[in-house]
Length: 141
Image 1 (cartoon, rainbow, N blue to C red):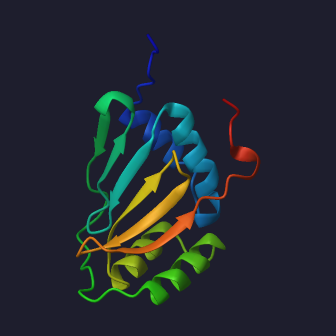
Image 2 (cartoon, rainbow, N blue to C red):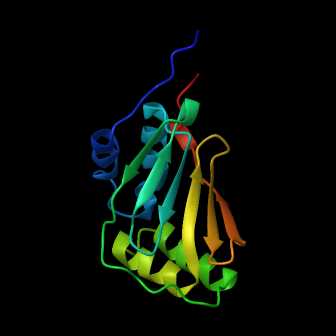
Image 3 (tube, rainbow, N blue to C red):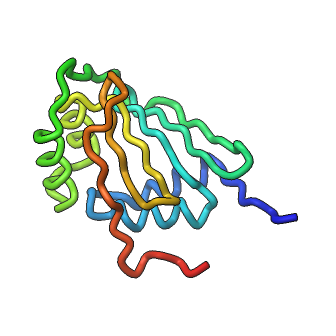
């Protein structure tokens, strides 16, 4: 029987503490993958998140900030520009969260099995799906 990895909220917070800008995101996702995280949902409204592993194993992190208003009308074009700027390291995480809220993003799903970050609006519509750069971060199986 294959043993599956379990992870803790503290391990996730420790990995996240190394992230300073969007440029650090690929390393962060690899750290999560190494812990056994397969996917996580980040709720833009309050910064809460659910990290999912094998066998329905989940760790939920509480809200990180005061509630943001999510724009009723979403804009994939605006979102792509916000993502581009953040990936270049030009915005911090709180600014990024406000900007994606302004673009109508309700949540994003980071899929570490398919190496994609999917941004979803209030209606559940996928606005943008971005590949997560792996570079030399990807750990051999």
